[in-house]
Image (cartoon, rainbow, N blue to C red; front, top):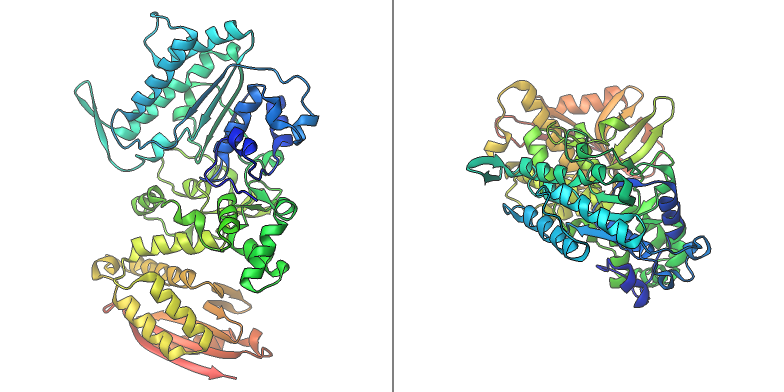
Length: 531
């Protein structure tokens, strides 16, 4: 079986015999049901392949679709003039790069369809090209724009500047202006357009690049197109039974156990209130090709713009995750509003995990273990800047938890917290000190959540700060800042945090910890061993 990793050409994928998860029934619905669309999906989720598939379809290349679902649905296979622009693969942090790309692309089209000296504006020039192509073909035009937002994301919140006519401007604002003018084409050329699709990671709202033309139909959360990109559970089992079996043999487990491993690692994306599970295709295909379950998607690109946004807005992940939101709070992103949540969601680091029909709200949290561990590690390294190696420290903590060694845990926590520079933990007021304290603990326990970890776990008489469950041990932690370990242990007893585990056969540790604001590390650590 050949896996199309890095293959974004539908022509090459089909011609060279790569495995293709057939989405053409949905593509047929798309092209027959509307005109101008926008689709947001995380990077490496198959957007470029979708664009390439649409390009081949509108070019009338029926032979490529033989045996696929659309082969039974389409009867005309008409050829349309197709205009494809891909912003992938270009670094737009360089001033003038976006202008060069658009100018070069439109000039190439002008050589084929004709140019007028009447217009200098790039949008009007493109509109003229579309009108000429319409006349020459006798059919309206198709425009496909892949990763339309990359020129903005590359410079978002960087402060990079450019000089226009002697005036210095933010490169981010310049890029929005250029794209707004280019996309105004779709309003000018409405009569010459058959179909338009823009794909990207984020949706920038009306105040930005989309205001130059009639708003596209945003299908990013449309239930009928939820599985247009990515791989569903049914598709996983139908197309990939053989590689799942290979992985299972290599891991010395059953096929069913391997399916569960893959589900925990790569599944968990939801793009509508229907809550259909969607796997990350990039990680899944890499795991099959390499016969190894690893974190492929996260390691393939660092979301530096998200880290910049979190730092700029001073938002904490624990204040964003595991909460219900109205869709308007995380779908539209206004580049002039300092809210990181929509960017984190649309970039794929959070996803829909629940839907409350009574209130019409969506629960947002990490999609799977790959994203959770990778993103939290990145944020923790940026926020805490510890001198200790994070990955090595996490491994040591997990081993100590697995082996039931609370004293070793004490040493690990003490050394890690002591390795955080004073400048990172020095806060002005009491509120900020408390916020830093809780966020630090949140990041630490998210980092080690290879086991079942509950932070702020709701119980009948209160919330336990943290409970960690392993196959052989249960750890109940209560933390105090500038208090005492005895106070923490007393709270575990008074609130009955251990009560749900009274009949549990696992050994139970109640651990009271007091942290010092002065030293920034563990001051007292007391442990009661039960069982």
